[in-house]
Image 1 (spheres, rainbow, N blue to C red):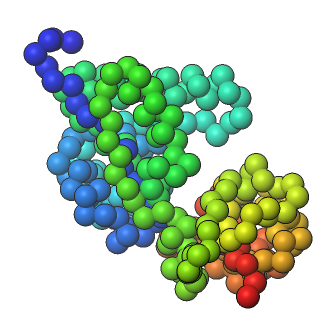
Image 2 (image 1 turned 180 degrees about the horizontal axis):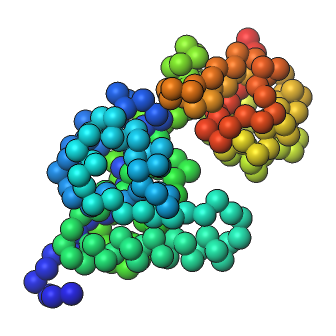
Length: 233
């Protein structure tokens, strides 16, 4: 890279839970003002994050869409390799002085794959900025018409995939994310907790489903399912 070319900035931009109207003004502006949009997945135009963004910013279709593949596997070496490859793709544009807008579902700081890329980019000397989006659990709580916390209640956000043993061990309310493949086990754990349980699948999307009790939640709930468990009063 020529020494007089200023490196671009990588932005991790949350596009919210699904409804394009829930995207922030800042997210929309950054997409409009920049030419390179990185999209998680092999086919950018089929990615959920892209479809959400396109609903709010149709101009995204005229941008340079860069696919960033993130395999859904547990092989640590394969995942690390994918993160390195993703960083290399983004760094190529940054070295050309172009900003890169990496769009991601929900908020860019909550169980976000961009976080791993961010660590690599920053270690390599690049500037990264995060732009918050409405988190899925906030949108789900609003859809259910419930508060997540009141007065002195703590709130715990946990990945259901890794928390299927025992019971909910801390006082307060819970958001349980990423439990799709372990929904049955999570339901069994919740059944022992005595908590009031509700869930939303595909929150704010066209195929949204609302479950008002633990018994209503199907064992095969989809990937974008989120459970809210509140202490009984």
